[in-house]
Amino acid sequence: MMQPLGDFGGVMRIIIRGLSVLALTAGLGACATVTRGTTQQFTIESTPPAAKARTSSGFSCESTPCTIRMPRKDAFTVTVSKPGYKTSVTDVKPKIASNGAAGFLGNALIGGVIGAAVDVGSGATLDLSPNPLHIDLVAEGADPVGPAAPAAAATPAAAPAPAPTPSATATPASATPAASTVAALAPSGAK
Image (cartoon, rainbow, N blue to C red; front, side, top):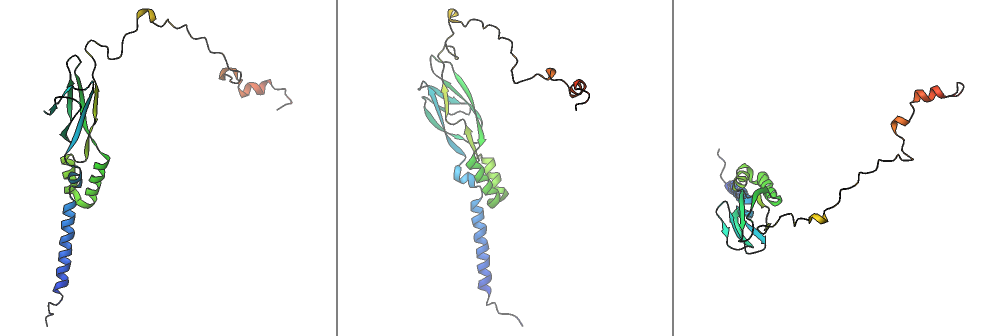
């Protein structure tokens, strides 16, 4: 005889719970991509200010300090220039961020391989470095190390260092007699 379908509601509750867990897990996929995004604010500063900055990826600003939104995963160079100053070129590279790595780990544990792959592929686990980028511009014709010392103020040649003197407490190895020599010099009755 057939059983009535009276427990059909229990089976449906289990299916609905399973689908809810699956939907929640799918929502956690690509966690760092959702929480951190694929771009970040990148700040360029210069001394003196009001220099023009441009990146090798086509972004620019007319006057430093400035902040531009850049993709997290792409390395680029920043060129900072100002009339009367030498142009400066600096490399900016993505590096794994501590909170990006935490998002990736959470994804790997909860969201699975697909979410982790999305985070890595999107660059969401990375931060641009250095950020902020600070450039000290050097005036044209100036020595970047500093002004040269006048010839008259040059330091005289140092006298040779005196030979080291033996220490009263230290005995060189060559001055210590070997054990066999000490035994040979001891009186025959003493040991």
